[in-house]
Each structure stands twice: as structure tokens, then as C-alpha cells.
Amino acid sequence: MSSSIPRRRQRAFTLVELLVVITIVGVLASLLLPAVQAAREAARRLQCQNHIKQLMLGVQNYEDSLKMFPASGIVDTTYTNSFEQFNGKMFSWITLTLPYFEQSALHNQFNFSDYMVNQEKDPQRAQPAVLLCPSDMAKGRLYTDQQQVRGKVFGKGNYAAYASPFHLELSHRYRAALTSHRPHTHSHLAPEGASNTLVLSEVRTRAQTDDQRGVWALPWSGASLLAFDMHDEIVDVELSNSGFNPWSASLGNTQPPNSQHTTNVDILLNCNDVADSQLRRMPCATYNDSPFHYWSAAPRSNHPGCVNVAYADGHVGILLDNVDEYLMARLISIEDGEAVSPP
Image (tube, rainbow, N blue to C red; front, top):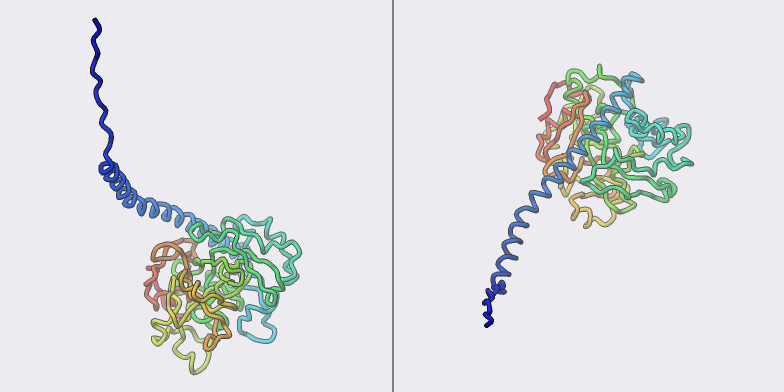
């Protein structure tokens, strides 16, 4: 006589239960994703900060070796005292300091006795990792212009130096730590002192090949150089070498970190596709478009609410997007006569 053992009936998920589980998993993932993204961005920002630290140490090593800071750029000043960024040999401060942050091989490929647009080995096309911030994805982004650089192709990076608290073309009048006129040393940074003198910050890039921002080998506005556009008190009367005194009328019209001003934007040789530049929070304008007859550009990054910066003594920090404008102008200027401390 055989007996059968009753089988336990397995209960399957109902459609409603399955949808509930999927919903719960989706909610948990949506809660976790921002935290994961924030952690990744924090890691990227630290890497970018490490790179700017290396660049600042390169500037310091240059000054230790040659007893002067590197020039903001090698340009032709034969016919004018202003900083003519598009004339002459057009070598940036980064090209000058390459050997001082472990890029001697790249430095040796440049022929500094010739013009940048005549370089035979095309070292200006390189994109060393130390010049890239992973938050920006500049790797592979290039610049060229048939008229201005004769079709030469340039690599883009993410770091620039301040040339002036005012305009780039007037950097010989209102100086930052790096200048093309009267190169100086740490002794010229008094009373601010090296620890209170802002030297380097970050820039962002676009995929457009006619957007010069981030072009590390050229001493151009938004490429390897920045200017804050804080006017001097007497700028509308006369230019003077008597020092820099921030003008209150400039407030709200300067170039703070990640500036979104509609009336004072990054001034470039070409700003095509203005809508795209605004969509990417990188507003710009073409120099020849009235009334944009000046050169300045803001530091920019994809780090939430701030940019990485480096000071003349080698320490690094951040500047918030809403930094006090007077403070930032005085941190950049070496001739305002006031000792200020970084925020």
C-alpha cells in the first residue's frame, strides 16, 4: 500500500507585491545616488586640489631657482606698455614652469626662441594629467583658430593664474603675483605676504574648438590667465602706478568664482553658441561685440559652490562663489597696501 506525501504549495509574488518591491528599491536607490555622486565629486575635487598644489609648487620652485616669479606670459611689449596677449611669442606661464612640476620632457619640446604658432613638435597639443581636473572632462578637448594661431591645435586644461585684480590688458598697472612687467619675488608681496596672495585658480572648458578657455599654452584671457574686473577708484580719471584701490562702483559687476552675470561675462576672441555657454553656466561674449572692449574672465569649476585656489606660499584652499568682492580683489592685488587673510 502506497501513501502519497502532500507537497507544500509554493506561493509566488503577486504583481502588486512585485511592484511594491520595485518601488522600494527605486526609492532607496534615489536616496543613495546623490550621496554616491557627492562622494565621487569630493574625491574629484581633492584630485583637482592636488593638481593645483603641484602647479603652485612649480611656480615656487621657479622663483627659488631664478629669483623671480614666472612672467604671466611672454608677449611683445615693443610698441605698448599694455599686456598685448595676442602679440609676440605668446608663451604662457605654464609653459615656462613645466620643468618645475615634473614636465621637463614636454618643456624640452618647445622652441622658446621661436613663436608659439611655429612650434614644430606640437607640444602645445599635449594634455598632461596634472593640468586636468576630472570634474570638467577636458581630456580630448582642443582649440584652434585659422587666423589667430594659423590653424595650430592646442590642448585644453583646467588651471589659470591671476594677472590683475582689474583687466588683463592693464596688468602692468594693477599687478597680481604673476606679471609680464617688472618680474618680482616674495619680497614684493608685502604687506599682504605670500600666504595672503592669491595666485592660481581653476577654469572650465567647452567642447567647441573655437572657445579658448583652458588653453594652457597661451597667455590669453580665460585660457591660462584670469582678471577680476574690480576697477580702481581713479580709473576713469587717469591710470596710475600709485597702487590699487578697489572702487565701490564695481560691486556686483566683477568676475567672482563661477560668475553668472549677464552684463559681465568671460570675454573671448570668439563666443559662438551663446545659448550653449549659458546653459553650461559658462556665459561669454566676443571681444569685438560692443560694449565688450576689455579682457577679463572668471575662475570656474564643477565643484558645488566653489573653486579651488592656491596662494603664493604654496597652500591651497577654496573660494566660495559668494566671496566678498573687496576681499577677493585685495587677495589678488599685490599693490593695494592692505594685509588681508583668505576666507
